[in-house]
Length: 410
Image 1 (spheres, rainbow, N blue to C red):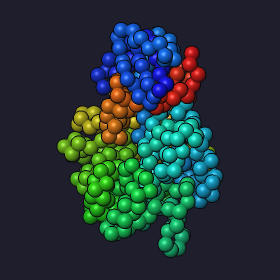
Image 2 (image 1 turned 90 degrees about the horizontal axis):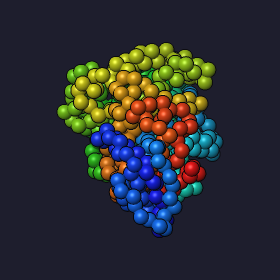
Image 3 (image 1 turned 180 degrees about the vertical axis):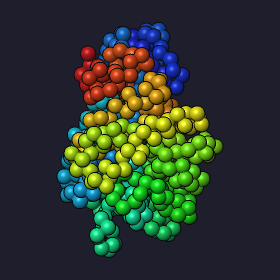
Image 4 (image 1 turned 45 degrees about the horizontal axis):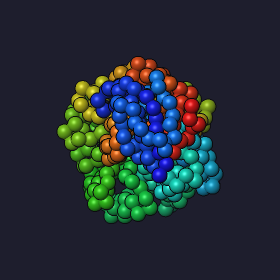
C-alpha cells in the first residue's frame, strides 16, 4: 500500500486550537496512520518536506450547490441535463483547488456526481448529496412564475433543479424515501421563504408541522437527518421542535430560537458570503429583481446572527451557498467569519464543527491516526492570518484527498 510521509510540518488541531510544532504525518492508502513529534522512520514512503508550513485538515463547506452554474435558479433548472453536469465540472474542480476536500450539497447533486468524484472519474470535493430538496407548492424550491398554470410539476426531472415540489404528509414521506433510495446522505427541506425564489416572502413558514415531522421520521428511520432552509426565528424554532438537525442560513434568528436550538442540540450553517456576492453581482448575473430586493433584508442581519448563535452556544458550520460565477468567492466566507468570531472559530467551522455536522467526527476535519487523509499544507499560519485560506488556493502548497495528491509535491 502506498505510503506518503509529510516531514516536520506544524500540525493544526482545530478542535483544541493548538499548533503542534515540527510533527511528522504518515499516510498509508487513504488514511492517516501516525502523527508524531519524533521523526517517523518509513523508508518505503514518499517523503515530502513541509517544515515551516501548516498541515491541517482539508476544508469542508456544508452548504454548496455544485450544479448551480447560473445565478438564476429558475434558468438553472431548465437547462439540458448534459449541460448542467458539464458546467458543474469546473465548479467542483475549483472548490477542490481552494482546499475544500469535502462539501455537503444542499440541493441538486445526486449519487451519480458523488460517485464520479469518489471513483476518481472527475476531480472535485467529496460530496455528501441531498438529492433534490423538498419544497411545498409556492415554497423556496418552486421557481414557477405566478403566471404559470400549476399543472403537475416537472421540476424534479432536470439535473439543474435544486428542489422538487411535493405536498402532503404521505407525499413527503414518499419523496424523502425516494431521495434516500437514490443516494441522498441527508434530506433538505425548505422551511421558510427565501431570496432566490419568486413567490415566497422570506417571513413565510413552509410545510406544516405534520409534514416536517413525517420527513424527519423518514430520515431518522434511514439513520440520517434533516437540514432546513430557514431564516426567521419563528421558522427556525418551528423546524427544530419538529426534529430538524441543521438550520441553513438562519439570518433572522432571535435569542429565543437560538436557545431552542441549543436545547435540541441543533447546528446552524450561516452562508454570509452569498449575500455580499448577490448584492454586488446578482443583477449583472441574471438574478431576478424580486430576489435582489430581498437581499438587504437578510444581509446585515446575517452578520448580527453570528453573535446571537455564539452567545447561545449553537455550533456554527461553514457554508457558502454561492451560485453561477459567484462560486469563486467561496473562501471569502473565512474573512467574514474571522472578522466577527476570530480566526480559530472560522477554521473550526470548516473542519471540526463541519465534521460533526456530517456525522464524521474523527474521520474528517482532523489530523490524527485513523482519519481520512484529507489534508492541506498552507504556506504560513492561518491561525495568525486567515487570508492564507482565502482566494483560489494560492497559499496551498499541497493538497491531499483520501491519500491522493492533487497538487505536485514541493
